[in-house]
Length: 441
Image 1 (cartoon, rainbow, N blue to C red):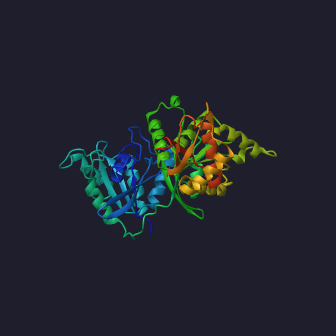
Image 2: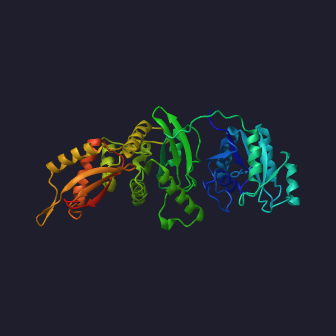
Image 3: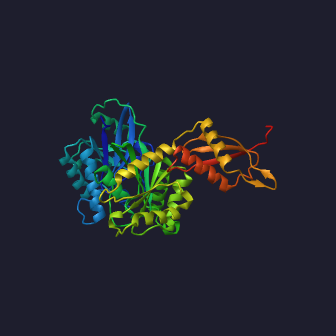
């Protein structure tokens, strides 16, 4: 049985994301004074008095709007309401009861779900101010005074929440899911891919660059295994990032890379490889994550004989700094070649976590050095005494040599390729740590 769900809803700029962050104990949602910062549904886990449940942060509900993005935000909030066991309606003490609050309250009453009215920005301790009692007019029962910034009243709020939650069956937390961060420039189809994989409109899709702001987690369980896909904001050049909200979005995307097992680097088949694509891929490479290059919008490319292989060869040259990365051509719109994507993600995750026995590693080392002699300089030859694996994620090998200066990069690359070919380390970077010592030590 899945965990109970609590949806945090309300009109824009009443402090929903601040309250959400306070409840889950992490800064998962971007908080800013600008209305409409949160757009997609953000999921977080909360525990209170032995109860564990999922909290959903939603975008501000504008009941009457013709704006495309605001309409999609309202649709995302409606999906959260439909999935919720309990709804937290957040209002603003200083603004009082507005017409939008009345519309949202009416919508929530029709949902048939238990609704808890939360009056935010009650920052003083003690009896609530006179303005607080105005919120009884919404007809949602006794309001609860909270301060999402200082945390006042959140304990009483959570007590009310757990009183409405259904009994949860105990289940072991799943730790086997592969975390996949979908990264790339704006407008390459990251959110469309997540929506197609999950089978629902999990993320807002728009031609407007920068639509996605937060890092959105989506759980997927299929025949290939269990995955958590993380949709991220498009990464633009630093000189292009002038908006404070976009700055936070970029930070969220970089944090998503850090907590991922595999990064799917999406590029636009119609635009082709750009300098920004190499910088985005470099973030995943430097973080030591498993990597897959996904060329999206392949259905829109005019094809001739050998078009795919020709583009693959060109991309292999463009991504020469990470020659290990597999390249998949797909369409997030039609679902073309998604099977290949899942198989490659699993392979990259397995390679990234692979551990090789020291004996087997040194057998490969002996064969490699016998086949191609280590380099020499002024009569001194490089000697590699032995090699061992120090860690995984990514696979990191320690080489004990007589001279670190003689261990040229080209010979390191040769040994790396031999290890990759022997043990099937595709889709993951490999690190070498050089330890210098003399024969006597």
